[in-house]
Image (cartoon, rainbow, N blue to C red; front, side):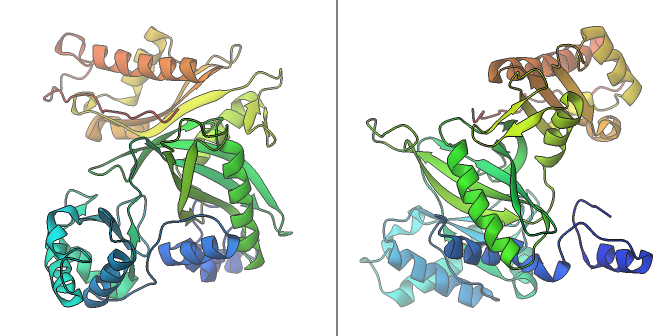
Length: 391
């Protein structure tokens, strides 16, 4: 049995059916939490932000936030994370810049502590509907940590994916540059493959170290490690050293990068080359893609899957099995109600993949104007999503 995320339910079902479960034992899920990830990073000597141990109430949360600030007096922001937050939704940003009057050197620890406790009401949440009252009520249940926010003029969000086989061997599967959104760029929206050439081999090395630490604990199947990369200000940095990295979290499951990569592999019959971090089809041509689960606009509401098929055919957006380029769609059932669709745009270069992706958006936009409506449903047009491309 294989599944997206192994829980006690899948484990119990596998036992009742007497079939092997190719997935993580739920008793090991801690190592995919925020605090568990930090322990693994420390053991594997993978760079990660300064932060706290796990706490279980807002009083202790304020204390560890003060301790972090006193260790790093120049800190501008902190991230408060529920220990089991998912896809950035359990994160909140604490801005220290408006309270510099109680920064270390300007006020006592007691004043700093009280000010931060008061400041919790003004956290920047990644979910529009989240409030401090609700967020704090979940801390006794899930626990929380605080971490230094990684600042930088030019930042990217790369990740590395791996797999641990039943023999405990670690295999690196892929690297990606993630496309993030939300109020503070913490919500996963999509990805580009592979990660930038300047650092994808380094990502693989760290991903392998994390995989070995997980395997030693009995972890199995897929995992991924998310990073923040900041370009150095030093223009003379040696090749491969232009970026500084901080590991953010481990995901012990399949994720948003899993199905695009599997799509590419199944459509081309190609292979991933670990020495270069590239994927090659059977003819040795390198392949690239941009993928998202979150192409959403109100103007797409009312489109049926059959309408989308018509648009794909009319604009020739489909995947071409001869050139092995084009777009594969998923989540088509979300279009009518939510105006949302997922897609993977595959090309023979990063630019071609991006051009193919943009052609899809242009076609959908042109076909959902009032003159070209398929369903008669019209909503107020929204501005296009502002992507910050990583590659």
